[in-house]
Length: 150
Image (cartoon, rainbow, N blue to C red):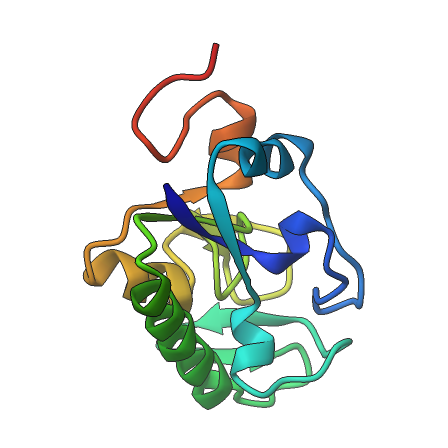
């Protein structure tokens, strides 16, 4: 399979805080699959490091109140373009992120509280028929090919 993957999960220091969060289980997928690293925030033109942002209604805003929605939308469109270009059959994205979160994202108040929802990129990929998972799914043995890990 060809799988789009959040670059931070592969060890690229591109998170908002300039760090990475490599995930051994995701990295191990390289043995059998082609992984395409993406960082929608960088693809959207945001720097690393950058202020933390959360989804607030239909906007993505920093803690300081700056609306960065356009960059998040641009990055999501670029991630979708790359998924199509490389024929990605699925995506594994960073849980809880305002770009990449699947199923749960932070509530927009910078309180650490999670709510139901998807990040901007995750939602766009799903709307275009690309199944989206998080590293938590992979850590729990759920693989993008629909099979359970041994």
